[in-house]
Image (cartoon, rainbow, N blue to C red):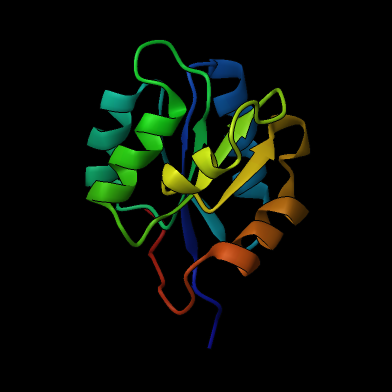
Length: 133
């Protein structure tokens, strides 16, 4: 029996980070990149198509910010594990992470396979498998 595959989606207005995230996700055993979005509206549409297990959402995006995007994703996909990401530390009330429905906060510079695995081990759902596209 093989371990379930974790389907991951990234939401970030920076194409360069989305590309790096895709490469890290694909390089991490047991994880598959399902999709990406550059804004809240696109994130909700893509999530509706791919039903991700794990979603990384940039805190600072033009228009609807990452906290509200996380809230909307959590409302429409309650089983998804959402992690807020930023190039900076989380400024503001730490309860903002929790109130957004996010499980954790991660600095973009720390985004790597070992951290991806640790976040899933600590916060992810177990036992659900997804087939890579």
